[in-house]
Image (cartoon, helix red, strand yellow):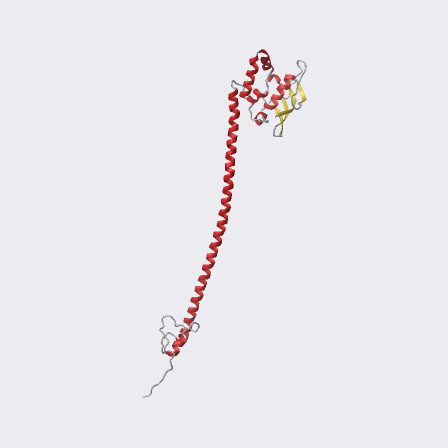
Length: 263
């Protein structure tokens, strides 16, 4: 994250002034009471809010600061914060994975804390330990490293689960495609069986209709009585197959000429 600029619309002695910050290190210098501390406090207030009451505008105007911040992702954020009210402005600390307390412990060092570093060699180590703990309280570097390693391990596990899920999804899609193909083939086979059954039933109906027509023909010719004699047997014999109707006994004498014997 890099702070590109901060604008003090009304903050302490500052009024409608903008401080651009160059890439890398920017040093703000000046004599006493030249608003160096006010600019530092304005930057912190623009990013996190909750400034000290001593930084209220000297001329009684509305309490307001703004800042432009660029993130490592390439995104640029612009914050315009009304410090007299909780206007719901973006808390930049959250965008870099911190809260206001941890951001204050790592990104901002007060002048009194700088003096404590000069007074004792242990002061620097204490502030570094506080910064590593990211919460502004007592802690160790090992604890800070644990806080850094744990999210990385969780992220790696999440990535592994994502890859497994993607593999399962690929297999499921392939099986679904196979299922759809088999379903189409099953419907086609079922339709073919239905058409074949209709054709077979149609052939059976045609055969039954032919037999019924033959029966009606015989009934019209001979009435309700069964036929008798050679003519009856010939007329009742099927003309197409040369076979006798089922149930009518064949007479071997039917085709013999009739002779009369005198006395």
